[in-house]
Image (cartoon, rainbow over all chains, first blue to last red; front, side, top):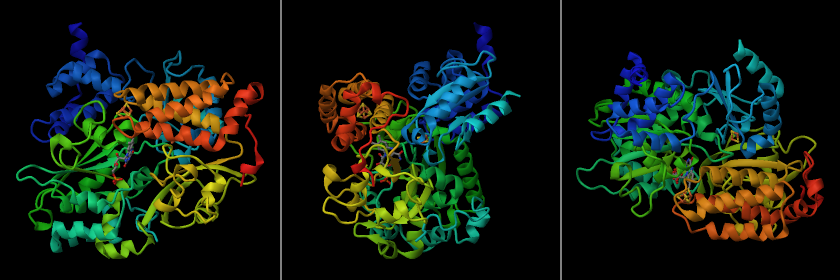
Length: 165
Length: 444
Ligand SMILES: Cc1cc2nc3c(=O)[nH]c(=O)nc-3n(C[C@H](O)[C@H](O)[C@H](O)COP(=O)(O)O)c2cc1C
Ligand code: SF4
Ligand code: FES
């Protein structure tokens, strides 16, 4: 147990970044840095295990439950292990009008997974999300910071092929 | 008139140098060197510009409500949460011309007497957050941000804050909770943010597009801004257009352009998809009532409908809708209204923060009933049940998400009741893949 805990530490760059984030807020309001630091943590550790959340709490000097509360409220934080690429697929109305359901069906078939599942090779996790503020460029999904827009079945094939290499 | 998007296609406009060459930051120089904060507020008041986040509350008036107790910091928070389905204008603006927002933030912060201001961006737009942070660095290096701006003694720091994926954090008090590092549960009002907002200090929350108008207003004067548009819908508005149109995208319109021109001219949407007919429109984001095509183009009195706050709401909810956030969604005859209503209901169920029971229970209930109608398992009684639930939610919740969930359902039934009935009476036909109820008389 203690051993896993020890492995949960930010890289020196991220630790510096976290300190800089904490310093952005007024005296005594360092809790505002919670979400920025959680994003930083997920970038390094891929998902928010309890150890990761406890580590974040220690950085901010808040109780672990304050981190759990936030992690369970916001959909961007993964509470279970995820594959190398997390595909966050928009399932909201405007994208549906642009053919979002057909492309989604193709994607699930291609990956052989349903929502929330990870492919057996550990490469892809499929998540359904709500409107990504790209409705005129739909259908769309996001992988980490990158938006993939105006999707078609062919484009999906290309993206998956590219990322599987 | 292009106020926000005039230079948006200029190569390199995302950099400080190009933005500056195109006249950027002259408004900051003007306010800092020549104007008092009160004069800036006055100019914005004169412009008549209304909040572009959805509610359309006059921005200058909101600014003048800000409490100013001695020795207490005041905050400006920019709402860049942009999660309302159908809305992608702030995304477009920030990624293409970030300095327009940064410049607006400096002007607005100066007017309000804020020394630390925040831009709360939905976390999904992390790449845009990096763009904004770079723009802030550039503005700082040029002396437009940081300590002692342009030698005036005025200090300002801008912080870009990521959200975590929650529509409700677009609601201003939920946003403030989120910014304090908590779950996004809307606060009970009063007190209003103008008195007790971020960290319990007086706070103004404004949308990206609202704040971005200020540099033009300062450069050209509030009166010049008010001369654009129509009546109390002054100035220009960004419209995010999606759905079954030839040219989806973001368009800047003069408020008051006719709905027909906006939908059908090549300057804007370029008409309904080739070979198809107009069935329905959601004019201002998923939360506003849906209207059939003919009521979008003409009011109940047969007058041309205009893209303005007043004209779009003409006739109230019986025959009108709202401009909202400018999330403009077009449905042609291939779109199933029941399926779309269910999709939106599912969205609101998912996004309800769960604090008040009419919203938490009501959104879930509406989603379930719509789901069974859509899947051929509904009964006639279900339609009245939906109307009944929507009425019980409306007006009975802590924040307006409840209303936002109720209106799309109520309006879809109001205008497309026969389509719901068809799903119930003809479940086999209605559940065939791609099956859509056809009533030619509603098509335009
Ligand atoms: C559920 C809900 C979601 C909202 N989402 C947004 C949003 O994404 N962006 C926004 O600017 N305003 C949003 N608003 C409106 C804000 O509460 C607030 O009125 C607005 O940011 C004020 O800015 P403005 O006066 O410049 O429009 C939302 C309101 C509600 C009730
Ligand atoms: S109306 Fe809905 S979203 Fe708003 S506070 Fe109540 S439960 Fe939360
Ligand atoms: S509906 Fe998919 S991005 Fe808005």
